[in-house]
Length: 160
Image (cartoon, rainbow, N blue to C red):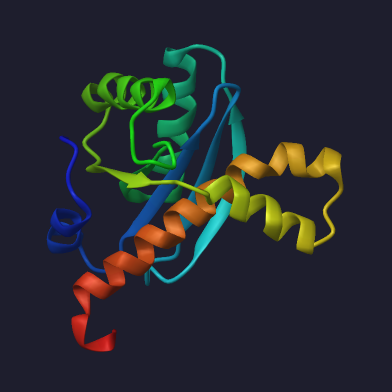
């Protein structure tokens, strides 16, 4: 399935669908999944990165297990909006993933998601060691929650 905009996803996503979000790091892939009402993003265990084939299989298996109907991918643009090497790596990962899945994929600006996730984990008094293992999934939750909020607004404009 091709990459689509959040607006296109809002028009085509079947009711009561689950949407997944990922934060693609160099060592891990943070994953989060929505509830069927598209209200709440919940973190899943991180996927430890190995090589693309293994990473893609682990990700697609997790998405199938949770019944995801779409994938939101955090796009790590720079604070000034420019695209750096991490954006290129994320786009390459998605380009390689597209032939392996029928899921529509949406890129979502992830600026400050890791900062917000770190802050939330600090507020919950999570130890440094545990934060290191949970940060990417927490960031994926922030990325997905932002997309879910936008999807709900697009699908129910009178509720804004």
